[in-house]
Length: 384
Image 1 (cartoon, one colour):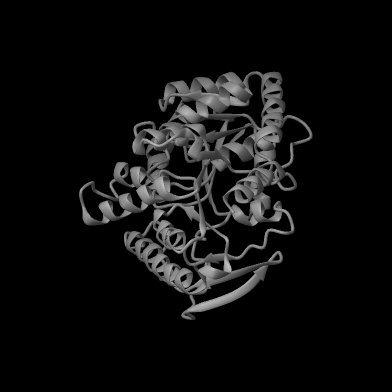
Image 2: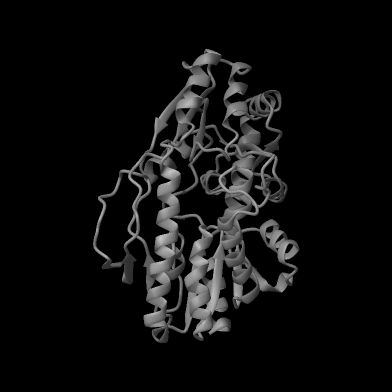
């Protein structure tokens, strides 16, 4: 229930006797890419799984528009109310409810289902409330903050089990709500082994690639600025979009490096995989002064899966992966440190090749969907 994008893959790995239904809102992101609907309920089947979509506000503005924050809030809140009503009517059909967050508003229908006798599993991949405060989207002590905090408390303390993407996230919740570590099961993001396949050989390209959102949590400025110190042959390509894109384009022009830094916009997933395979390195920038130590971003995992080493921000979970896998470097968000790391790796192709192979091995061991599906199957079997 909720923004169940990774559950499409997890469900595919579950045993045939697990009968699933997905309850979610109409698709709306990237903004403007989907036609808005006014139908209260729509039903479809995707990969053999029945999907019920409940109407909610569907933001149409680009993520750079100031109004889009209000649109997202309405999207989250209205869906959670309608989903709760759905559970009130249909709870008897289900043994277990899985609520997916972010956003934390999906915890409301989960709590309703638990109250009515269903097992409740909470799947969390974002410290949503803490990040909202850090980024200035929410203020502690407000009614909205207290409401979401209460939902989070209910989810962590009253559900049957909680899945989290990293060990760092589990410990954050253990400390915040004084619950046992046994409450949490690690289910990180998986990587599509058919789409993100290892490149046949180390790329001779001098292109460095960024893939993802350009938002407040992404420390792109020092990574862009680092290219002032790098040879002119080294280029940076940014794939994606976000509310800070115009600001970053202006910053690039101010630095006088528009010949080396290119903003591409959105591309298809298959094209993301191809560009990663054809790049010498990828970058994974995250703010170090926000509560993002738990993050193990998809962009990091997908780069590792194709064997492209990375230079990333030195946050706790990325540092952990770098030390365990040897697949990339975690550095401070300072142009000098970033430039030095890129120079070091670009100057040693054999080292990049070894790092790429180590990264692929790490993904095969920890981030393949069949392995993660088995973990979820065991969890559902225990809860139900």
